[in-house]
Image 1 (cartoon, one colour):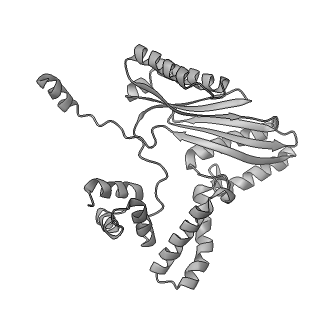
Image 2: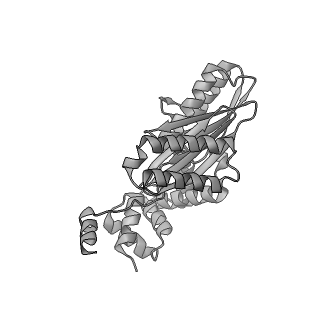
Length: 295
């Protein structure tokens, strides 16, 4: 059965019209992933969103001492508490605690810390997730918090040739962290894309071209060009640099390395967006008051 909720979910993911979404779900027996492909193949929708609706309250915090860095998301029930000075201080202290302990064997400690905050604030607090990066002698870790804790990024850069402390290299790492926050890539470069994901995208693009009236042979030739657009969407180094869209991130990296007299490579990165994949509590205060009165 194709429910209204399923149609809405598909619409939220693709931006396609309600009737198009309903038809796509009917054609794919309610399989939302296949329905997304169906809409894309028909040229009705773009690629599916990579994350769920941003809904939960809370904050993303980070700690970075140069050798070890951490990124943590801590959720609260209300935005009011998320902006509370005690809560923000708790998030920053927790990020440092996680880094100091390399993120290992601390689940019990984090739960205890959360309970202490619950007692102090009177609202449920959850340490949802965290990641720790450790830098080698020739590596640099940059951290960045955007929109007051709504988005957090860590990126680890390998700096060959003794250029880790070069001011231009340090600035590069910070700018790359900002790029990740703004554009939300999935991979560093195309080599990291799983073969099955790349093949799936190619098949979608071929079908899309055929539905535009192109022969299979021409459609397959067109994929080479269209796949470059796909790379720009999900691969950091293939993206136009946000501060100068006339160059790509990989060009910016290579120019910085040349100026510093060494070599740079981005080892890995992670991006947290507060509340991604969580549903926000839907409160109707009038109904809540009525329940209390009736109760």
